[in-house]
Amino acid sequence: MTLDYETLLIAAVFASQIVVLSFYTPMRWQQYHVDLFKRYPREEYPWLHPLPREEFDRKFAIFRPMHLIIGAAAILTFLGALSYADSLRGLAGPMAMCLLVQWMLPLYIALPLEVRIRQGYSSMPPPSPRSVELRKWRVTDFVSPLWIGLGIGLQALTLASAVALYLYRPGTLGIFVNGIGSVGILLAMCHVLFGYGYVIATRADPFMSQADTFRVRQRNHRGLFVGGAAFGAWGTFTLLHNAGFLQFDVAYWFVIFSVISQLYGLALVSSQDRDLNTRDFSVYRAGGSAQAAR
Image (cartoon, rainbow, N blue to C red):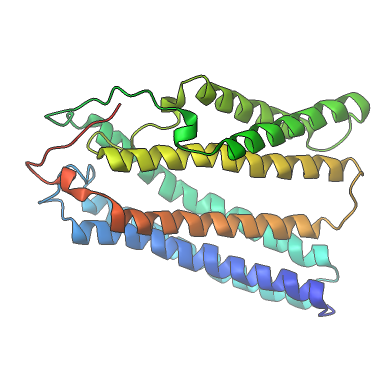
């Protein structure tokens, strides 16, 4: 394969994807839980650990070798594609397939574990004494009006594009996926704007302090509107490309999607590290008091 600047760009993104998604982010995700048990042992902070450490160790015993195997397979795929691919798509296609595996397989380990943690918190008795904050929160307390407008506007644009293409170019790929996705996101945004933000801004656990509860709500609202704006732009460009109004190699879509996925993974582990350094863990100590915010 000819090593021009486009090939080198895709190769660099592919290599970065392997490092970030197969090694760095899974190691940091696992290290977060290890550090949490080490800094705040279950004996002193019983309300912080609804699951015993042994359950985490069993999951990590599967999670760690799985990522190493996926990483090794991705490296071999990268070297093979770099050696034998005869086009940009021939290099970007394997990158996209590796990306799918790098996200989907580990979710079978990480997602059930996170669900079990949430269920464990829900089964705990509520903290005592409790304090209830009666202030009614507004969406603009958590996210700026600019992102609210961009999120709604770009999702509406994606929905309008899907409807227009369904009427005039019904064979366009991705009409129903983007249309249904936009409807779902718009409904969630409207739900929040009409005062039901607590649905997406639930507290991570009943013991969380009010300051940490605010940060969780802020993160959830930003995820909805900022993420909605990003996916709205993505969906609109995808539909226009599939309809033939925009012409460029599909390999660049794979590159953009890989970069977004890597940034998302880095943001997740960065959020965990920040949580470990800034969160008020005193409310989880045995005999401590917690404040519950509504």
